[in-house]
Length: 237
Length: 255
Image (cartoon, rainbow over all chains, first blue to last red; front, side, top):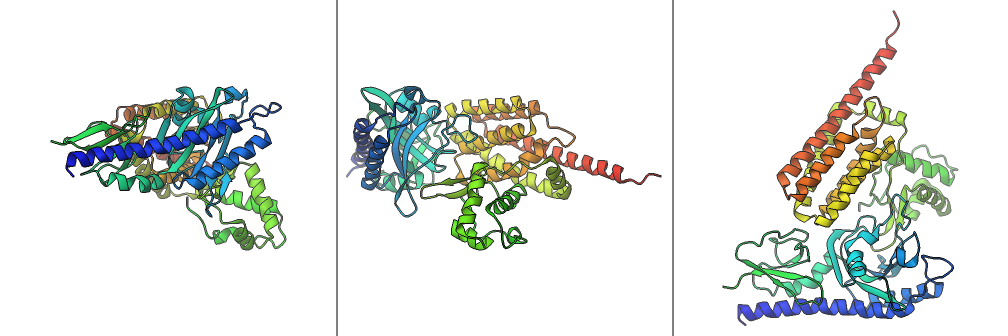
């Protein structure tokens, strides 16, 4: 295969990988939509039954997908008319079982997890579109170096929050490196801020921002619906 | 996070055979405020702790519950779960005075040396990795120090600023180092032990640092960090010497 076809094949494969992953998250979200039932007596909470069903569906998502470390739904405080936040979030345990993760949901607490101001919530809920946030250290959250993938979550015909997954950088790297290795030369997947998500060499390492395109390199957008991901790769003469 | 397989021996000394949960909680809290255990560390498992203290698991659980209620430890689920130290109990003024008295000038200098190495690396990495939107949040945190009124509020606001900056550098190792260094130095720095640190001057440094990061000027960011820590250590040494002088004067026998 020529360099040109190898490169375009890689771009197509990497794009398809993201498209598939987000498609799965959205399907997960559609299932959750039908399960969300707020507890009218307690603003900021789901009914016990709803919470249990969301747990089962989230656990199934984690069982069916190897990559994510955590998955679930996160709700807007204003939609719920509650001062406390609500995160129905499920994470893998050391023994690969799944457990509920508890966050600081009280806004006056010292360790309040102010999630509505984070990119993965602001974009998926505020701008109502798919979001990719990271790599970042989720301080006060799950306290890991992760990438968060989210999509808008609706219930009863209106936007209520986001559905999504947390993915540890070490695992994201493992999942994407095989695809990235096929790109001829040094290459890296860039997030919407032009920070390296995963690179295929020590030249472009996760987290670093590519503020100027290095000489001899080109940035080509990936074709993933409504997410500005791109591939940094050697220019083809 | 670092995990301890066993407690420092000194913590286990003198624990009476019949102890209640509160005595163990106090023992653990004291060891954190004295810096023998650091913020960010993971405690051994309940079983291990119980056997090290020579108590029943139920007693040990009571101790952990009390520490959780005080916001000193937090139990997290997940693959990297466990019970973590999240906050050092704020030491009393007298404890801080003794701590400063018992720390030599060269040890304070060394604290500054390590902190300089960590903070300058954080400043440099934040330049090449921080998202612009995240910097707005940092400006808010810088403002919080200016508005802080008590030593505890000041210490909390100051360390929160530096920890958040470390988050932006995206190195989990450097973040852990910064959390530990903050819990070691910030109570001393903001304690009311005579000379009080000026929050306005510290805030000016913090805002200048944000400005350098925004401009992607790693050299300037490193220089500001280094100078900021130099000032802090200077203040600590100065306070230590002033306290020493005061106690010498009061101990001087009347002639």
